[in-house]
Length: 262
Image 1 (cartoon, one colour):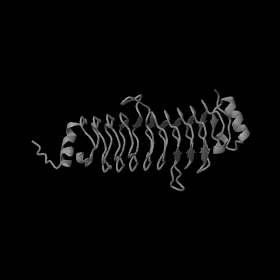
Image 2: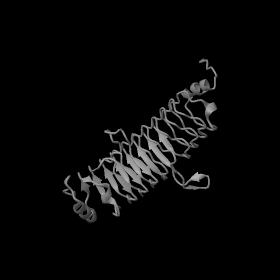
Image 3: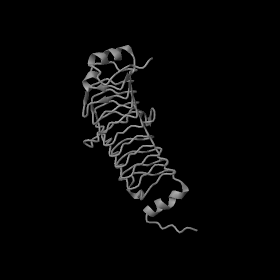
Image 4: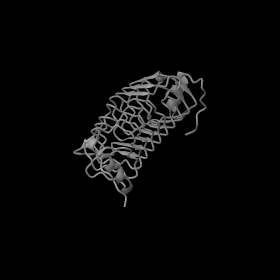
């Protein structure tokens, strides 16, 4: 597949022709409405940009690939993004300090790598097997998301994977994230209240000043994590929780137990 000779003055007609040819679309200024009704499977977009606060309505993004593309404060309403991949993409709009919005979207098996998703919200979206890697999610809200699709009491696959992500001040409350991966993440000042993290992997993550009321950490792995002042009495469950030996005194301090080092 050869690179396209796309210019920033790309027209809708040229865009449609390039898309149909299967060639990558590069360095183009695009309009959200151009994607409506298009088959984007296997389509590649490189160094493109959309108009700020653009609206994608019921667009089929399935299996498309996006790299170094700007979606400033764009809204994705009822879009199907299953198995789409985003690398080095930004959904944050600095001019208005606003993030993107994925509303009633299907983000199952979507991958975000090195993306800027600050202040982005995902109301009523499906996120089964979603992956966030080295991405900025500061202030993002995942409230109301569905990480479902389970077989019996165990997930068919890992519900969600967050690795090396900034999730400080993010809202992750009232979620079922059983067996999810949350490693090397900054969860400082995040809201984890009433969330199920049973059997979750939180190794080396930071939970300082996070809201943990009714958080379930049963059998969760927190080895190497910065627990801050994690009060076990506020948790819904912590039986079988795994911690490093160096973390014991912090948890005991939260219970009001003084540790006298030998």
